[in-house]
Length: 418
Image (cartoon, rainbow, N blue to C red; front, side, top):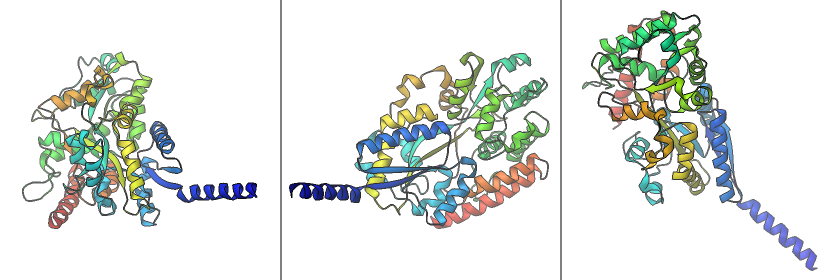
């Protein structure tokens, strides 16, 4: 009888444990083998600290992530937690939980930097629809050996020098000046060049009209078209995404790469530190440059079956120790105060980004991700039309007008809703 009762008791315990077991679905969208590995390690630690909880990681390839994720949500296959790029936040903001109260009650909430809090609330300026996990700031990598071989005495400080140096390097056999990102995720480059040649990174004028088709902005768009059509970038770079441009740099195919700190990981693994360096983006005619600053973060959908547990996962991934580990291995600027004192970030390798942050002539540009359809604009409209421009199918003025018309309409719609 005791054995029977013991067996019944054991089954009851198992049944209770099974009933209490929770499964969270987490979607990552800026996917790479290293990122997935780091995320899995942090999820494993979360599961170990929360027995009975399982986290299913769904990894979407970045090139198709926008469409695949939209299809998931539209079909009701909605995750509990998602890696949310800044430019998608406007699309999903009404479906995301406001984390303000949870952050206020969180033991690590007070050490989040103000920029982290501000960016997490950028959809309406008030509601924290995500906790950013770090920031991407654009700077210029350059290959010292290729510059020397081409007779370029110093890395470019201006846009004119950038074009001249790219021309000289492209005269070398099988080499090119610039790793152009013509494929997915390439909008940042177009926006930077437009703003830098225009001398202003304001997206809309006082009348709410987009500035992207102002003469200076068109000149910046033409700059990239010329770079490609003159042969200063590889022909297949019209479709290059992140992995291709980074590989183009560390393989020695092209001498210049404008990228965020995440590119430093792959480059450092494959190039000697003495062979490359990172400098701020070249300045335009106004003497200023406007490097883009972006971010992604952890957000929670309001359809989650367990809001407390989903928040617990976000808090775990966003804690100072976890975020520092993530920032070092993924390549972002951390989100907690004091992180810049970490020896990992106080090296010459990060000089280009810190010089950018500290230089008055470098003005970081925040994309208008508060616009509801900005994600669609960036990943669909801008991608298709910029490729058409590179291939000579439409002019710089035509692509600028198309972008300006779309953004002006979106801004008007956003303004009316405020």
